[in-house]
Image (tube, rainbow, N blue to C red):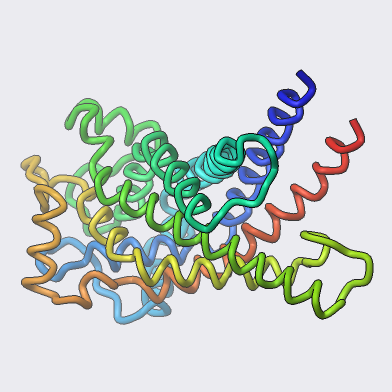
Length: 314
């Protein structure tokens, strides 16, 4: 019975650490997220979208024409989505790892880390897709829009349900699932394997006497590990983000969507923009998410270390 309670406590600690880490991640560098989304959907075929030369020009233009409100458009659903996503992700991920290790606490192989991360990513995507859709649409609102703008998160949800039906909330779910599963799997597998390598290197080098396991690592290590694993995941999975963003755009006044499905996005992007079209906005995405991932893992590991003693003392 006590073992079950310990497992429940451990899962709660992981969910809490993940949620705190998610909030900290979104709160930092958010304007870069707005810029990235606007670059992603600008395929050169649709009018009504501002044109930006680069990331710096985009931030300056949005600040000048829309003010702070423009730079933080969609901030509420971003905070909600990220906090919920990270909380659920760490909960599902560690629950899967525990299940695959059969509660023995034995180290998992890279393959099982991959499966655990993929499973967690799929579950999180199903739970949070409506939040990300609303965030994308709020970020794309600008002075050039002809459609009545959403006044906020709840108004967007009500309007989407009224005008497009509940199925619209799951637009972009296909590439979202591929993104969440592959991105998370790559990132967490890379993180776990890099962490093992650093721990082995430090233990052999004797950098900290009498320290073992995670006690050998510090916040700088967590920051480097988080950034490195995130960079690998972004480079391999970024096109899914572009496809999802383009699918989640608000339909025109006539109710006609710009793209019909994921395959339509792929064909049109290849036709008019080539391979480069699938990497639009990646500069601002890297500037935001590589350091943000460092923040996430530093906060997550340190919150976990704060919570762990209370569990071990019980």
